[in-house]
Image (cartoon, rainbow, N blue to C red; front, top):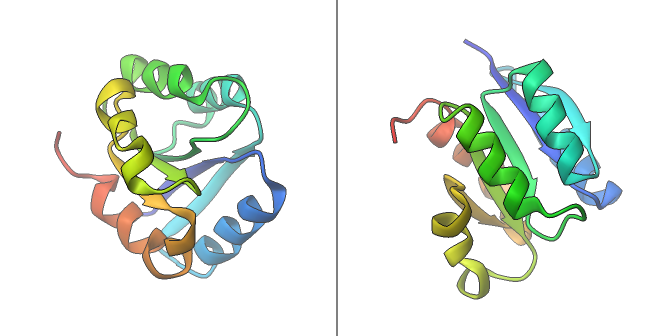
Amino acid sequence: MVIKVLLAEDDEGVRRTEKSILDVEPEIEVVGETAVAPHAIQLVRTLKPHVVVMDLNMSGNQGVATRQVKLENPAIRVLAVTAIGRHAIKSFIGAFGADELLDEGELDTKLIATIKLIAFSAK
């Protein structure tokens, strides 16, 4: 089964990096992209991804967007991505319901594996 992924990242360069990493993985399909958190909620409703890769520094209140995505469909997994560092915002996972946290510096080495790990994991 192909894992459908939505990229929610306001930095176009980072979003292109995420997409280029994922495009070479046959088990993952990027079904949509957005640069604004409220648009991510709309895209989740229409595209029905398995995983949302959500930038923690994105405009439009990504915390509320993450919570809304999880409230509307708890089966959708949210991978929070940050350049700030794990320790500074680890509470984001508990406060807003993200399933996992990944540092931007680890995208090349951990993005695919982390998406596969959380895609169909039971909460």
